[in-house]
Image 1: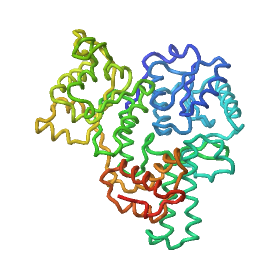
Image 2: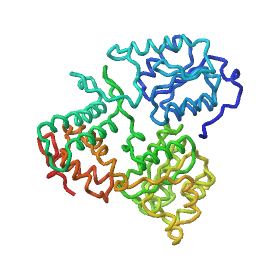
Image 3: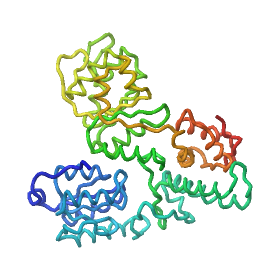
Image 4: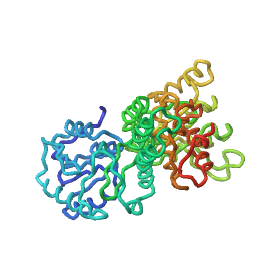
Length: 457
């Protein structure tokens, strides 16, 4: 793994006691920071493993408190890397476990005391520690839904779907669409486990996490996609995302940004196919006042607006050939020149591009510049079509129905409807699945279960 190494000596970089808090739970970080600050610790916060790595690249810490799960990196892998790169640093899990044996802070008791105080002051007064991600899913407690955020209510709804199958199995043991009713139950229970987000009500445990933020799927294709994204995210390497229309390429781009040290900076999107060719250059690079007819004032371009962050160029294959040399120069030099301006400026922007077209083939046909293709495809990532990962259809269906629950009561699928979804080849990919489910939820009217008759293709 290509994590960064600290350069100055450990003693030089830890003249004052510093602790890094690595957790996606901002509320818990805030409570813990208050207790540690009162004990005169300098606290640095990270929402995930990649951000924590970036913090340690600039300055080491005496100790790190890491959550039992991280949104971007496997905790065991992250801890092993920390042991290798920072053996002097005291590494503790937020649940109180010791991850680092070689380094021990002389003030470890202060850290453990602050942890206990932060957990005791949690909403509801629970002193339970955060559960590991593969813990079994617990049934919701009575009255818990009223205390949950909308995201967690959707997670409870997915678990209720799985529970309801047991009841329907007893009522309708010969449900159409599955030869064995137990098959329907097993598949839905597994789907519920794979997409339920963490439920923070007292007595709940954390469900198995999805592969990437907002990306649902545990099949081989999605696991490989998650592996590649996690590998490239901490770097500034240009990424080319390739995949059919509707596969979720923009979600992959957002995951690359979110799991990178640039996550706190802008994520700027430009669809190259949605802007007329005559305006695309000014939209990308900006323009000065009077640069062309209608330019009544200067304007910052999308590239400049993404300074420090990530620029996502969707449908890069639609970029006009006349503009591609200027884009290539920017990628090579990091400099841009506004339309109508003689001066150049340097910007720090990571570029992630996406296309549904075979760019290598288009470059061979001289419909796209070959040198620009090579500059974009430093790290190509392929998003599998939905027909290539049919094992993810049911988890995706649960996730999408949960999202629809923000506007209407969460509905469930009958086993017959689920079977119908599995028998379709999904040429429109995840986007088509989302539309089919939204239409089915409307057609079901006041009924809480979507039948096979409401699934239209």
